[in-house]
Length: 136
Image (cartoon, rainbow, N blue to C red; front, top):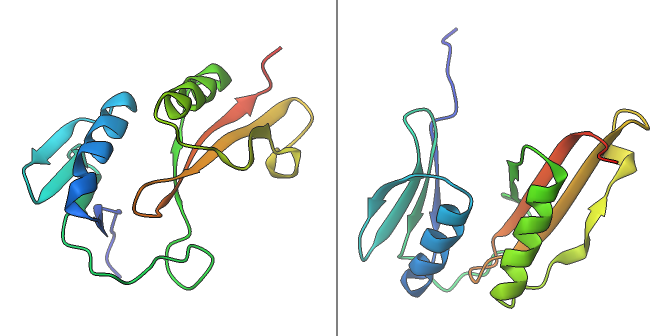
């Protein structure tokens, strides 16, 4: 048996959308590793996301086989609300009646799973979520 950790994820996107991802991940405070006309990489030495600007015309169906979404955890609930404000500035509609608390994902009444879900221009589904003590 070998011991591994998750290293990176490659996402094929339309190259015209690379600036969207650069701005989004800058807002989410993920450092840029690589940035050129054909790719953007964000992350650090332990994990990275690579956006390659060479997607073909196949359409992504996040309820089909393959990746459904990826999530970014925040330190508090108000950061999820900051993400919602960012999305509103970009005219990106939150999906699935979010932002909202999801008690079915919380461990007890004192904790919350507070999320916003949205879709990128390439139809990638992203979640920004706070999991922790319910803020009063």
